[in-house]
Image (cartoon, rainbow, N blue to C red; front, side, top):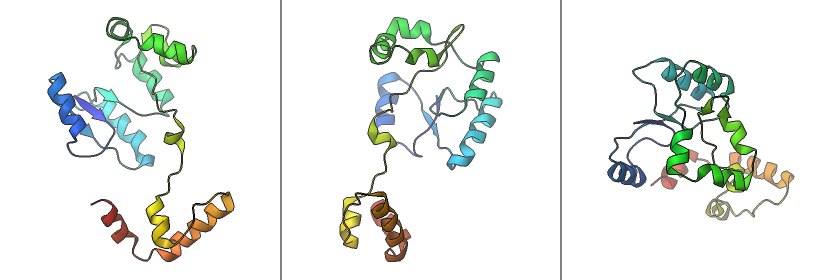
Length: 165
């Protein structure tokens, strides 16, 4: 199974899923945000590299072309047979499945990443503490923090290496 998203390398979740579901997952890590759409389009155009699962957004025109070309599978029979997903989404927002379905089936599953944490700026408290800074509470303070960050963190690469240990 080819899956576009996530980080490179094996993870515990990937290993657990492979073992439990008898799958071989090959994660294709995307390049920077600006190139990701192009990479997905190229992969979808190559029958030998076409991913089984894509987790991405902002490709409405491409998505419609893929449905029309028969490149995507209608998952509605599986959703009805194996999950209560449609009932769940209808209980949250009756209109959400409208955006996931087409005239002849459901070719994408709505994501559940609408939690505030997914659309939020995160600033590490230990980083602020190391710089002797308070948590910003206004946009002006956040802008000031951006300036301080650029000036006070002399060796940012070293900091990132420490963070990623």
